[in-house]
Amino acid sequence: MDAATTLARSFATLPELVALHARERGDKPALIADGGTLDYAGLDRAMDRVAAALQRDGLARGQAVAICGAAGLDYVAVFLGTLRAGGAVAPLAPSATPAQLAAMIADSGADHVFVDTASRQALSDQAIAARLIELGSPEYRAWLAAPGHAPHPAEIAPADPFNIIYSSGTTGTPKGIVQSHAMRWAHIHRNAGAGFGEAVTMVATPLYSNTTLVVFLPTLGWGGTAVVMAKFDARRFLELAQSHRATHTMLVPVQYQRLMAVPDFDRFDLSSFRLKTCTSAPFSAALKAEVVRRWPGLLVEYYGMTEGGGTTMLNCTAHPTKLHTVGVPVEGHDIRLIDESGREVPPGGTGEVVGRSPAMMNGYHRREEATRATEWFDGEGRRFIRHGDLGRFDADGFLVLMDRKKDVIISGGFNIYPSDLEAVLARHPQIAECAVVGVPSADWGETPVGFFVAASPAADPAAILAWANAQLGRTQRLHALRVVSELPRSAIGKVLKRDLRDAWSPA
Image 1 (tube, rainbow, N blue to C red):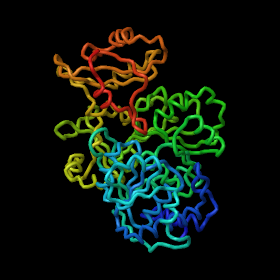
Image 2: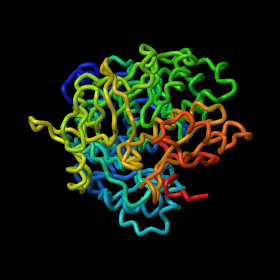
Image 3: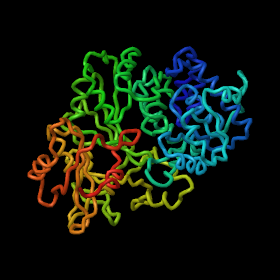
Image 4: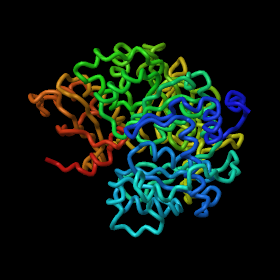
């Protein structure tokens, strides 16, 4: 069976697709990274050696293999080789604390943990029962099965776990989100018309992030080329995109912001781009408009969550008057809004976003109670996932997000949406970026305070506070405004509002 026929089936696996591409066009580059280039035939052989070694070591069907390190050729070989062996991948964030990493490894049930040098050092003081193997080292080369040694064909069912993605968190152990082969097949299959078969995709977000996998997996599934950056750097991204004639990428808003700020951005030849996508964090209308104006190719924003649920899509190029929204539900995705009692809100109302689609997690790993808490069922018993965001649909069916439900500030009995206050602050010429959070108040229960990065050394927080409060409603007014050198962000660019709340203390 050829790749085209397989891609038209109702279900296939990514390792199966890579093998077909290796047979049909084995000399085509699959991966380009700092370590060199690996064509599809070479990637297929590397996956075989990993898979055979894991099976030799007794990997059970569906058992996790953890990876913690910077992306590269060996990282991808282990990721895909684990799947070929019948296992599930648990990619971990190197930015997590050593204690968190140890807890995630234990939670995943992994017997093998593949690390880079920095991650191995970070884990040196932790009690890890699993075997640690350093990628790229003589130890790793010795561990691999001999060249030409093929693994036993693994039985893989649609419901079998593909990966365990650990949610970001600042305290405790992040929850493991179990996603199936069927879910990942849906991600690959739904991109039939997106041109991934001939794509050169810039991969500039970490491989432990679901954000990355949404474009990385279709690129390999359809037989394109992935240019993998171990670490994002705006100028280097532009240089690589120009030299490789890149066509596709997925970036988070802060990366677009940094790219647009490169002084000579407009001198780079980016005319090869066909599709740029964005997800994972709020993407301002002004920044969307700037990217559309200055960067060739479509700009599409996706709204969704790692747990699955529903996804919306906004074609920013085609809908310049809807840039304040996150678009409309993707075909086959059902998104609804519910109130505090779990009832659907009337048309035009604001409610918590819940979604249902073919792309939904199996559940949280070993956390049945947490899984149940994130589920909502409609009147016909169909399962939806709670997104945790508040939103409303406009008259044209475009979803407008208000805020994370947990970030809404209740002050004196009034609901205050931080995004409304942030939108006002962002208009001030001396503010580069900003965030608003609620902090405890003896008088009001909670009160809003703002943090901003100054666009000018002359920025005066007191003057900006007075300016902003003059434009806000009486119940919305900011209690205080503080300048910071930078906003705390996760590895994929989300502002860590919990860190801002924790760091707050009255002046």
